[in-house]
Length: 203
Image (cartoon, rainbow, N blue to C red):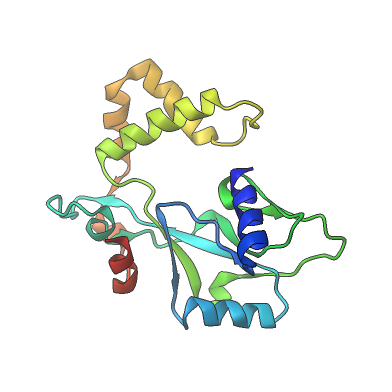
């Protein structure tokens, strides 16, 4: 509801065309052209939304622990795309953005056309876990937030609900185990640091 309300505000006050609802640990990157030119091309082709696939960056034994910026520290990503892409939308009043920004709904009777962002060189670089302390905070804060939420479908945040239940049962031992399970070998990943322009924005 908050994301949809923010999109409605941006549309009505600023007249924006595209809504790009990203999380704070996601970076939209383009391999072909500027984002503005790419979106203009997508709109010109008649598409109303774009599914943006994600590549997850992983904790590894090769990470430079002296580097405080996690986006600079984590330089290895999975070789496969993460399921559940995010959506970029040519937003109109009456549209509703779904939980997690993975989908949207429209009151329009006309069926809207969408395309894969990969076709246009767009992808998301995702940094879901950045340190052991971040793992702990994410499990505890996320679990408490889901417990406090009212009217939320239980399928939303299912993996975090399970992790929080395990933490309540096992405590810090579960955090250690969860962290170890998510530290990958660099050899199993692709070395692909975030491009310099995005790093400059991050700092």
